[in-house]
Image 1 (spheres, rainbow, N blue to C red):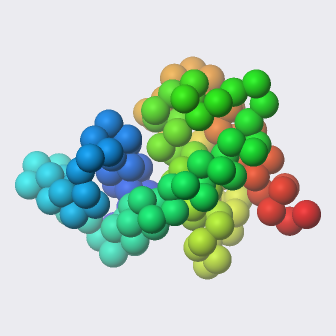
Image 2: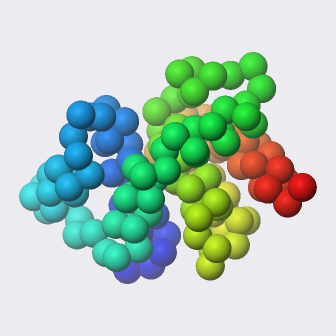
Length: 133
């Protein structure tokens, strides 16, 4: 499985968690595996768990880079992708920041609305620039 495919799997789990916050990480993983839609690999599982454990920090970072937006206004697909990318940017030092942003943008093109990819690109660009300052 490629890292892109693993990110897509992690995104799907993160998206599911947004709609089922009462479910534990293990419950979400079990539902995904029972559905036989996919089998989690080590990287996708690590991403999913990291987003769940660091969601508050990710949301703080995302919020600090929004202009005229709140987390509540962001479409759920975009929110899931932003959380995934921000956690990867902050906590996965072996992955270049530009790769994290590009992967999120590509997933937004596949799963999001017409403007989601450019919105995500703008927010993540700001996050990356802010990280280096």
